Image (cartoon, rainbow, N blue to C red; front, top):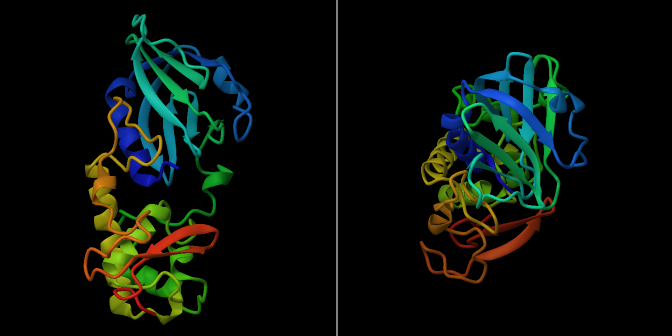
Length: 273
């Protein structure tokens, strides 16, 4: 599933071809995704993209008529192709095409159809954003905030980190990696964290996500950048997906467990409870 670094990489990849450009038409080839594609999108003609931004794992295209909001779901991706490229044949899983006045097409491909493309006139009352926590790379997400949020919380720490009401975008891969780098077991209750550990976790989350973005995301299964290149952060993973392999720090075999219905990976020695 594309996580925050993959979505940020996608945003940065399409920005040079999309920002400030005019959408001549949006072709909806399949409207039934996670939710029905907003019918307003089929009526977009000659509308300019003013800004391009990300909120959590959502891409936001601000236009002269409102906001187009996209989510890549479990397997979605965006690709830029030339409108005159005869070899760039539309795939059966290319469900939306944004036709731009600069001769480019932005194609949304989603084999599992868990993504979404919605439209709203304003962001202020957009329901999907109402309960989202702060962005992990923002100043709002800091040690004091995390300390206060973690008090009296006894859910597993890994699940807490992945709760979008606490902080957005810390997905499964990056939660595993952060906890390993901090030497904290994923089952640790948040209420047991010291203030120093809160500061360490916040700092490490920012570092891990920044490095993943710098590397272009993580290539697991089918994530590809908009230019067709894979992400390379997978080459730097310490524990995720490495059950049974030796810990890179102490050599103990990495263990796995299902926490909050997600696979978790940790070193029982470096991250002992």
